[in-house]
Length: 103
Image 1: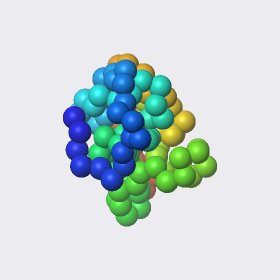
Image 2: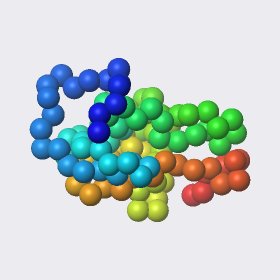
Image 3: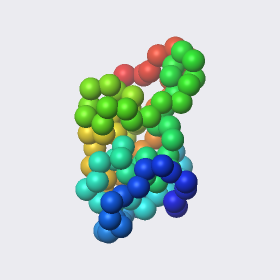
């Protein structure tokens, strides 16, 4: 499902696979950087700030800032360090008790 996004691919992506993010299925390009693919698909937030609940998303795109953290297979990972693969199930990172993230 494509939603309005300021991020676009230079060429029409091919080899799309199904990825579930936060309960919604997206068709994303296999092998693409997960954070970039989610942004291009219109996903605006991958987590909330545990203190203010402000939406957060990819910032540095190189694994330094941790803003794009998501949960995959129960583990906290950086979306910018993951490649899109078929059947990937990704969850928005949820703070525990509004103060910090589960490790």
